Amino acid sequence: MSASSPPWMTPDLELFRDSIRRFFDNEVAPYEDKWRAQHHPDRDIWRKAGEIGMLCASIPEEYGGGGGDFLHEAVICIEQNRALSNSFSLNVHSGILAHYILRYGTEQQKRHWLPRMTTGEMVGAIAMTEPSAGSDLQGIKTTAVREGGEYVINGSKTFITNGYHADLVCVAVKTDPSARGRGVSLVMLETRDLKGYRQGRFLEKIGQRGQDTVELFFDDVRVPAENLLGGEEGRGFAQLMEQLPQERLLIAIGAVAVMQRAVEETSAYVRQREAFGQPLMALQNTRFKLAECKTTATIAQTFVDQCVMQLMAGKLDMQTAAMAKWWTTQMNCQVIDECLQLHGGYGYMLEYPIARMYADARVGKIYGGSNEIMKEVIARAIERE
Image 1 (cartoon, one colour):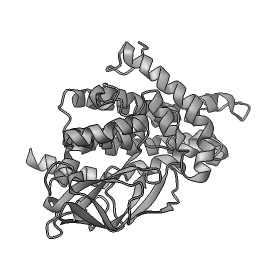
Image 2: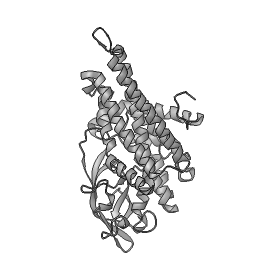
Image 3: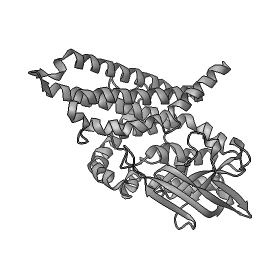
Image 4: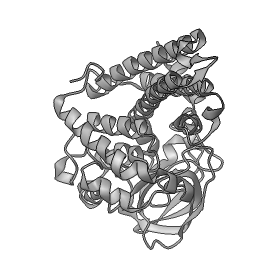
């Protein structure tokens, strides 16, 4: 095990990491420019990821998964972010949606959906955000009305990651529009040939331009009532809250990986770039800025590793996950900005990785719950102490 490995790393996980790293180097990185231009990855990347065991690595083998745990998802998240290969969201598919199904699905639902998610036959997405409801999920307006053995869904969602390729979508709906959190339910949709379901345009984003992010529309969409997740209506908001610590920790893990890549890229650049007859690295300002960035990245890594071990022990609470999410994404943007400055004008050119990092990182302070909401979560926990 290398000296820089996190404390939770094992020899088996290192072997797994090596295979994941090769996959991103050989099967993903060469196509990122193409995918950014077309605003979505090619569909066959999901099948290829399934073939090497990258999808649903933490889902039990009895449901077709890899039989691993959260540490496998953490390794994948680190390698994907360090490779700057964010054009398809493994976090949403494997680290989040698959675990909603595993935790709340019936035995039939688990055996029906999880094996196909593992192979890449089905791509998963989660549809929560609406044009008028972002971090306040209690305010969603998409409805699901029970009619006999079906739910009839009407409404729209936006900013849906994996939305273009998604065959399976977990939709947050109001089954009781008169209630707030207690009126929210989660309903699963198999989208193929589903009448009344349609995708909107690719959304033009500042960064992460290769990731298929779209709007979704539901016009009298009918799905079987047994597609309700959790067995009874009104449990959706509680289900979302229970799963958020893991989702937010994955965001933090990714932010730290990018932060480290930014420092590495910049360290290499300032060694070979000269100004005033000497390498930039010889200038005190460069050295001090890099020292600050390296320190921040190291502190972030230490904190996130602690959170990973807490999650594995079943002790990661909502407050600590919120701390990790907001602070690492904030520091990621700050470190990248400092590193871009050290690149000078070239830092503003998209052919340099630091420019792509700058654009891609900004959304980290918004998705998974905005950083302002994270601070509110922490403040409420303080009030209860």
